[in-house]
Image 1: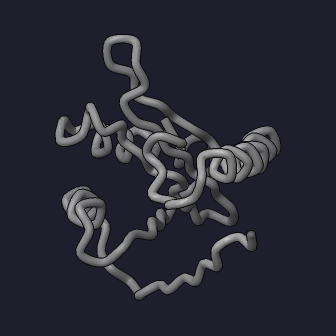
Image 2 (image 1 turned 45 degrees about the horizontal axis):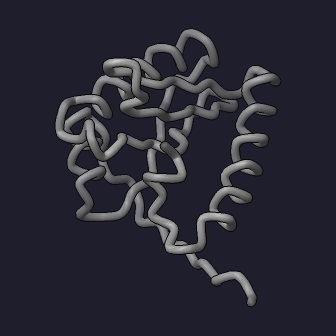
Image 3 (image 1 turned 30 degrees about the vertical axis):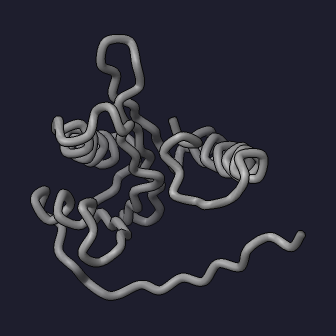
Length: 130
């Protein structure tokens, strides 16, 4: 699902390599007790997934994704709430942070869940060299 829902406009082989490395880092964080991951399943298919990494009481959502076939069905909202509760209990996350693009559908969902804009973020991405 992560590959099929990825907004990265790069060839699949590049995205697979990137996702494997990212998943390895998240697994290491989970093994160290610094992160957790949750998935939502509908009729035997992954409908959505997301992670939470926490340190010193601060938790940051990771890779929030809803499968295109299950969007607009409350999957993301349910996962946001479930992982917030689990993050507080399992990781001691007292304050939660999520990063999204201004004006996006994701931002609307997060605001509906009680998140407020705190500061703008900016990113730079260089395409891989050929």
